[in-house]
Image 1: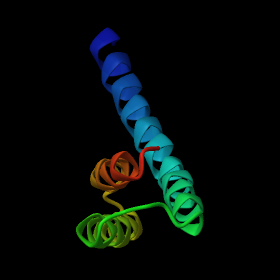
Image 2: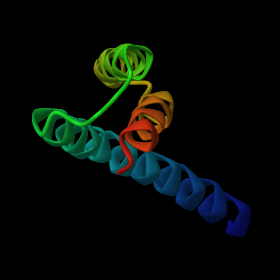
Image 3: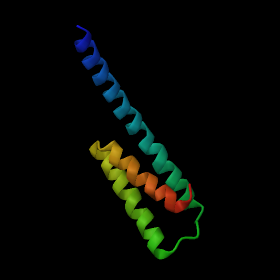
Image 4: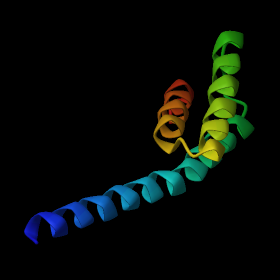
Length: 82
């Protein structure tokens, strides 16, 4: 009985962590968009990389791969200094 409870609890926690990641993707994208609206001083390579990471992060979010989405968006935020 105890192992069944542990398994169910583990599953619930896993689902909750996925939901938390899913809801954080839009806030990461909004932060990137806000910073880009400020026209930060970026090289052409940095600007292209940020755009690529932002687009791929959104695509991963829409595909349900929130862990990868957060990773990509976090990388873009580092380039932007946020």
